[in-house]
Image (cartoon, rainbow, N blue to C red; front, top):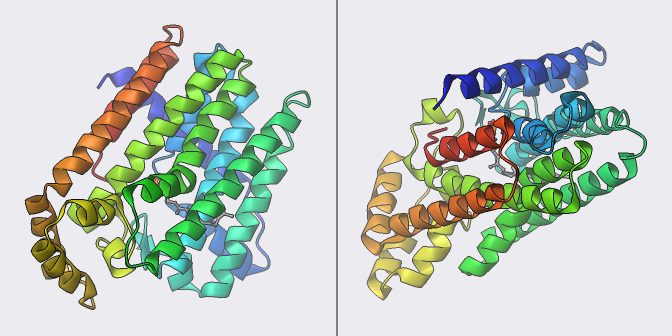
Length: 327
Ligand code: GRG
């Protein structure tokens, strides 16, 4: 990957992180602000704000028009993680204790709420002409994330879920913040309707690839590198791509073996390894990798329709990063 891209990604991370910390100077009440600061203290990959800024540049817009929205988006993403960790009982996030583990559920609910509202306060700074559109896009997407999360939780209690239903769920849960990043960046940059739609589709496909990778990483990643609990999806009976596809591809005998492994508690490294081997035997891991590649190709096609700019090159680079990510 080219050096300029990496430098740009790192400088975007620093910029967004600086803005987030600057917005969080309040001390009291400590359980509210300390827990909010804890949630943002280790920065994530910052893919979503980077996408928002690049989408703005890709339509010839200025960073200044997009920066507050980019910071707001990362806060919203962090808020969903804080609440998700309560719902999934996760202990580890970005390599440190989750807010829910370090404090308790009440504190984590409030910390998440605080982050969401601070994000909306920042969004209010967006240019007045574009503000109604941006508020509509953000609110619609966040509601869709709620729907995706509700489906995800409902699926945990269902014995089987189709691959089609799985894709509907991840389009909402993960795809929406990716497509929101790209669509709102393009709107803030003053892109044409065609450009806005191309970038929205790019974000949607990238989000799909990203979540499929996330499903694979829950099984295959190294916990220290990943920075969150490995095997958490299995423990929580998540209907990931791997599980929904196994239900389609497995023989009766393979599905019996899978079910008995999935019912084991707790799920340890031994079970994870056995489940991985079984899914590989069914052809499910290859199928997942194939789906990742298809989604990344769709993302590439959407970008082809945009004018050739440095920002577009960086968006192509991001596709390669996601193709090879291990955290
Ligand atoms: C009101 C929107 C709303 C929220 C409550 C909790 C919840 C509903 C939704 C959670 C949705 C969720 C956690 C989706 C998972 C998306 C995902 C792949 C997260 C990991 O993102 P990364 O890898 O994380 O970009 P980093 O740590 O790099 O920021």
